[in-house]
Amino acid sequence: MTHTQRPQDAGPAPLVGIIMGSRSDLQVLAGASDVLRELGIPHEVRVVSAHRTPDWMFAYAESAEERGLRVIIAGAGGAAHLPGMVAAKTTVPVLGVPVAATALNGLDALLSIVQMPKGVPVGTLAIGAPGAVNAALLAAAIVATADPALRARLRAWRAARTAEVLADTDLASEIVDVPHRA
Image (cartoon, rainbow, N blue to C red; front, side, top):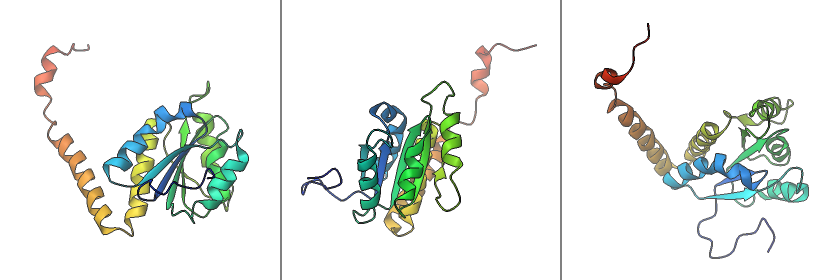
């Protein structure tokens, strides 16, 4: 079995791929997997390094469509070549998540991902964990365009976030112990 094949008993085929350059990026991208799981979207999570495993990266990207992936979330730090190189090898939408992996705290990765040349688009999200969660929500919205049941789950998920905020809007009782500034 190759890196792009799935075992027969692996469950539903993934619709979203979450890829990252190294295992250390998982702590940033875990939130994306959590959201996809909560929304009931089958997905896979893989280490696919643009620099250390370029042949595997090309095979992953080139097989994405035939394997049924509808969106790829690619997290990368530093030079952040993974999202763009994957996007160059597939027509499946790629969402890039910059990871703060260097002294530049993800700004280098953000600029690398967002400055793709004309003709090779990568949707670029915020740096770090917030970007990963938003990438999952954007992937869900893309997949939901052809799945009314998922669209309903996504609406319910968003309504629940709204309800959480509305349930906690009165902070007057918490001001008592907050020191006042002059």
